Image (tube, rainbow, N blue to C red; front, side, top):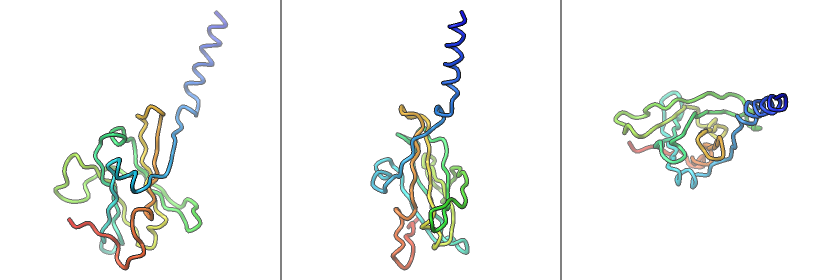
Length: 149
């Protein structure tokens, strides 16, 4: 009976270990994001600079979405600030099956901003993707890309 208890104890420890809460994280390219049904859009936002948002439907990988995080790094890539983003409509009359998360920042800061989306429903466990705003928006043009709605 002691062997059974010892085995059960180690099995319990394995189940609650930090490894069970780990996720795989990778960078998501604009092409792969499009394949997954994720688009990034932007528009001027008055005195608050530029509004940037992700649009997606809760299907495929996004069906099991657990959370989205926004992060700002300094010019050397060091973490400065992050916060959780909750889905909410960006435009009036937005279709109910379309989910959006957004933030606003000054144009100069956008190159240091990222979204991270995480879903725990994968067969591989938790999976997260980082979307660098600079990979999706063109900073070489005089005005930022704008949504035509």
